[in-house]
Amino acid sequence: MVKPDWAGVFPALCTVTDTKGDLDMAGMRAQVEANIKWGADGVCPGIIAGEFFKFSEDERMDILDATIEAADGRVPVLYGVSHSGTELAIRLAKHAEDRGADGIIAMVPYFSHTPSKVIVKGHIGAICGSTNLPVMLQDAEDATGIHICPTTYLDLADEYSNLVSIKLEGPGTLDKLRDINRLMPKRVSVFGGMAAKLILQEAALGADGTIPSGCLTDLIGVIWASAKKGNAKAAEKAYAKYKPWVDLFHASPGATAEIEKETLKYRGVIETATSRSPKVPLTDEGRIRLSQILADLNLN
Image (cartoon, rainbow, N blue to C red; front, side):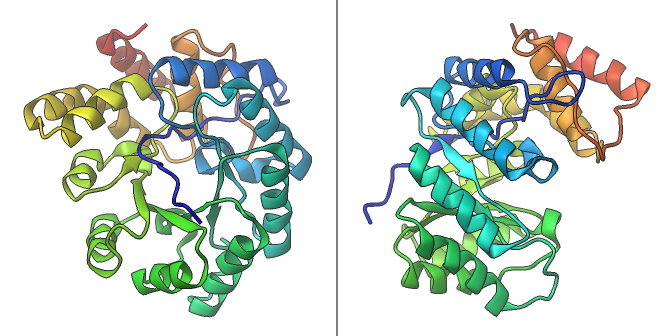
């Protein structure tokens, strides 16, 4: 397989719902349009930030269809197929290929907490083997609690030519990025996550891109472009503007989707910031703090 040119800022899209918690397709399309306007290099629906685990299989397919329609070929669409079951993840991967997605993103089976290389390789390998689409492996150890040794990336890439990218997030992100540079340089593209918390360090270590929240993509783009150009002062200045938001995000477990959606609502992109349960509502203090941060950012 020819390795796709995935690089830059690929925001993880929220799944927009109305006040009843039903899918808001107009809101999904508006979010895609806003991110393209803000300079996104690609978009990623249906991953952790999109709360994929709260939506049915049919709803997840509808989310992809709305995203592809809105993107209209202007940027790559990488669709999240993560599922607790291998066969169901494969079904979503086949749907992505049928519908014209540009690639898929897959996590390990997040209920299989046995730290087994066999389970990781079997699940991801089966997904890779089921599709001709390029695959990004999302190593979200902070979310799944499953550690993946970097040599597993190498084994999978050796066996499956369409394993072309790794998304790293969790406590071992920077060490794993160094390991990839050493074990398999240029074999896969590497993206950071965690709402771009470590974007400066990841850029310095040679990451190809970042997958932040899809609500401050224009600001993230300034940070990323400056860092990759070696303009540390500009990158640090832009990150200093962003830091209060990302600090609040990581200090609000259970309310992160609401923070992202409230930010999109503040910017006039979507009408409601509703998230399905289970969730932890943003506190009154957190809501006031978010309003202050967004006002200080002075973004349209």
